[in-house]
Image 1 (tube, rainbow, N blue to C red):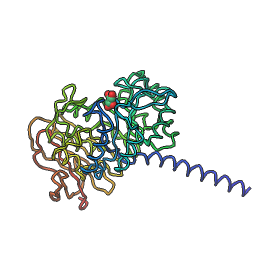
Image 2 (image 1 turned 135 degrees about the vertical axis):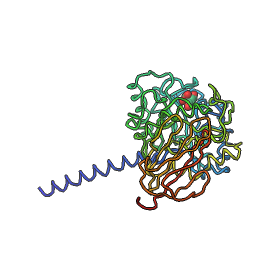
Image 3 (image 1 turned 180 degrees about the vertical axis):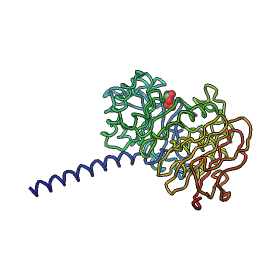
Image 4 (image 1 turned 120 degrees about the vertical axis):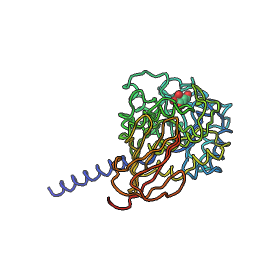
Length: 400
Ligand code: GLA
């Protein structure tokens, strides 16, 4: 009897430790929001291995890698069909040395490599995709040393059930591929993936359509993503699409549909708002030719620390009127981050009592764009420029 009891207890222990390991393995793939750079919004399908190598060098030399942007994602347009064994292959003109050699090079710079496919026969730009070849493609990606897969949903049926089945199929295939590969679900929010994407094996899911290089597009994506804070946590994240910082109205997909560019205050808001929402930070500007402002914004380590905070809370939008949006994000060390956005077309003064945000204490206030501690306060009073976002870090001083 004693023996049976002991065996039973042992089995229970093994069961729980397995469950813990698998939960941990899932979180380990994206314990904080993924960071990196993606080809799409600047280069479109006009990509090749030289561009990726140059970007990798620029990512390392500009400080992007050191700041945490540790992925390069190759988006649509890399594919060259399938070989006579149905293995997916890169376009031999764009990637003559193959993806494995490129991955080795990118890895040598301390950067992970991401790639792109689609849950149908063709991708959004009309290239070869993975439907029916999930296992084979996942193994191919693993053999190349791929670390991240963005999986799109063009040319696929619109119902949610099919989407769940197709995304799960690829997530399972990645898990069986023998390599840890982050799975990024990209069906643009239409089937409310925040309810099911983590369950089928995604580490992040797009909540919105494609971002364009304009203030209106940024606000559109913000308004969708801002209501989804309860679905984000370590291991799985809402993705309101790439950062448009530094694009400056350049040609490329983000330049379409009114994407004529933003000013630097607006790009700074993009960074602040994506950080307060614990969004993936995926730049898409030409890293080889960044101006000082783009660097200042993308490399703000104090803003990045808010995004990457290990508590993994997406900031909650506590005030949302036509002028002011105020977000509150609790941090792992007990500090609180606040973002105050002026959406109007005029500079305005504002006075915000922290109490009205549920913050009852006195705080030491640090302005994360000025990189300055501004004093001890129970609120924020000051001018916020049109389309500016103040990003503050509050440290509790005393109770009441
Ligand atoms: C869709 C995605 C974009 C990009 C393109 C590529 O539009 O949402 O992010 O990947 O496809 O064709």
